[in-house]
Image: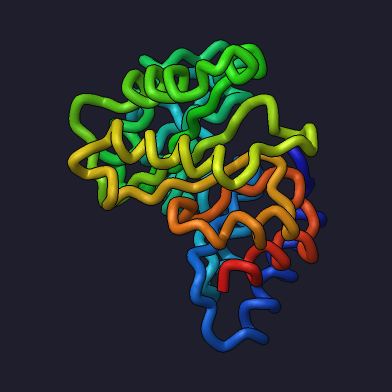
Length: 235
């Protein structure tokens, strides 16, 4: 819940200009602003390689759900991606994995690429239950039928979000490998990305691993210099 119209458009325009100065952007870049900015930012991004996404959607296609926004509505606004199951939604809005699985199904049916978030709490991490917690959450957050062609799994350890404390490369690799194992036999076909206090410095260290396919960037994305610095590390 960051950004008003002026600041949102300024940030989007800044990123678009940076793509124009770099001839070949070899990275998939997606921005997911608040609902209120989607339409305006869609126009800014229309002639650029940057794709538009949303931060959440409702599991139903339409109906009497005051204040909610469906996946089909997001497509109408120009979105191609949607983040689902973010820890802030799970915690602050009490969204359980069963609800998130319904959202994944609705989003994929509408044609959106899903970025599905999973991650363990500090208590689970300290109790050495990371793999168990992530597997349980992942299995319960996926519908019985889902398309591997338009889904990425974002591993975001809750204890690392906004704290500046991050797992080392070996820890992330272990979790990403386990996620692929859980998704077998299609695990190798699914992108697994990392989210949790991502900085340009951290990105550079993580990208040496073949297990880390990209990043879900948080607060650093509120600054064009920081966000673009991460993008440049992935080139």
